[in-house]
Image (cartoon, rainbow, N blue to C red; front, side, top):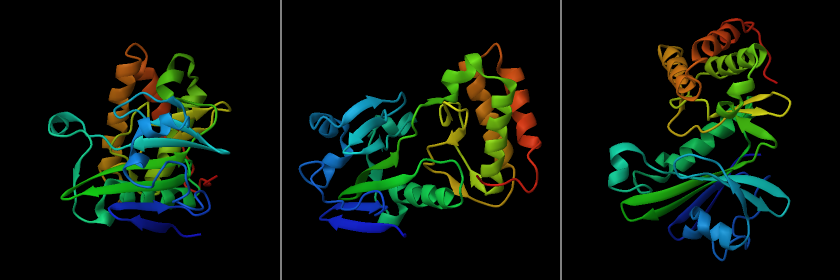
Length: 245
């Protein structure tokens, strides 16, 4: 089933109709700005937790659905001007719509990503704000939280998983130990594809891995080198005809 769009004044949503059957359903009082606001979800009693990070992701429980709401937030120097506003250059060029379509493309290839539910964009003249909703991965932790007990086998699986994404052409510009999740049965997932893209093979693969190495140094400075070695072994030893499970 293809993605659908819904528009109401300056609010726009790109959604999977199999996971969000009716975007104007009364989850919140009205579709629009409130859908971007974690406080609005919390006021309705729909927030059941959060994840660390800039613009902390909110865990939502909506009827029988378990979702993650991630508002887009700026970092660095740009955040001093505005943490949430982005320049409007067209709906399909917004951060939300681009990430929604990329995540959906990866999901349809059978890669281990959370199912994308919806991207919400609200225009404000020459700027916009946005958020992404994905399905929550049950009983999963960030790799950063698993490093203390990570086995060489798990780290090799992390490397093999990254290789699968690289072979699919994904340049993950923020590959770090928080964007890799590990489930209770040690399945590895990759999340957060903001500003990422599909591209031909190139030096970006090594840049991705070096960024992850710096992240390992941050979270486990004493063991980062052997951890990275085990990870790269898994990355290099993936069979050329590896299956996409």
